[in-house]
Image: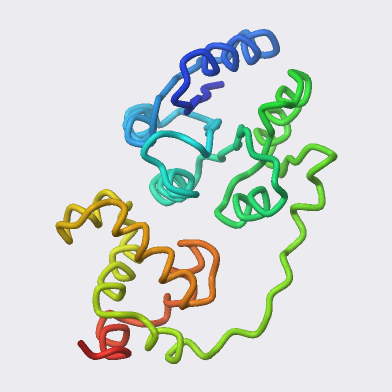
Length: 219
């Protein structure tokens, strides 16, 4: 069994590794301190069976890390091990493809059970967060063309790069703007398209090609 631990705090990685070794002494553990490093490990070790991922790391905005790993390595399940316990965050992590969610405050037995269940193909949530797997209520959205028409030309460019799976830093580099500017654009795109995540942006605009999106709001 090969597991990848992705967290930017060395002490927590060590503690997590020690807990896993107690329950699974046969496990081969790999570590990464960020998303780029995690992708490099996954690309070089095709036998990894499970990724344990922290959501809050330096240089990672929202669910970008989860989205990036899921998009690049969709067959490898991801168990979130996070300091967040807000049901809304848990729900969105599941919507982005996480196979389970374990708060860092949980005990060792819960983590061990989570690994076992996710490795068997099940979805894992601790008892206190079980309701988070229920879909969130949604209101009626405006038609997509109307929502797209709200975007500025620069926001449309950012939208296209989001659809291509690019991270904020990559978008900032291509547009020659700061990371904070890209974050502001992404927030406005989410608000104007009436969605709550980058994945929903991609899903909502999946049926449109570049010309259709570009023509929805002429420059």
